[in-house]
Length: 160
Image (cartoon, rainbow, N blue to C red; front, side):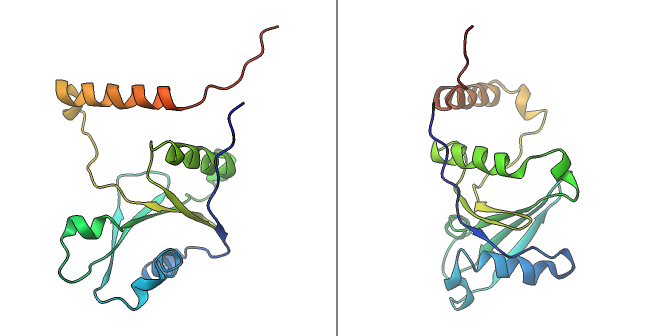
């Protein structure tokens, strides 16, 4: 049986939608405390494509660094959707995400907080249906899915 993934630390802080920016900063400072005093603003971008969770990209825009360089330290803050715990087991979700990260199939999971997760940001964009009609794109997706299947442990099954 495969060993269970190592979960990051859990902090007893919650994201507060009513004070979104301040709350997001308080959470990201748990991972990047130097961002409090380092020069440059902390920028927060809300992604709106999702339907269940709140997703924020938090970036420290350090002077003299390119957007690409700043994105290397950017963090995604995912806040769980309200009342979704009846559909999603959050402990299993975090363990699954940590397993993916340990096998380099997802960015590192940095910290869990009361109502969400912080994990590293990977630059890119969401594929559109039109993108997936292009052979180089669907082939790359197929290769990546093959990597997932090759790296993830299969659940044990008993033959009776």
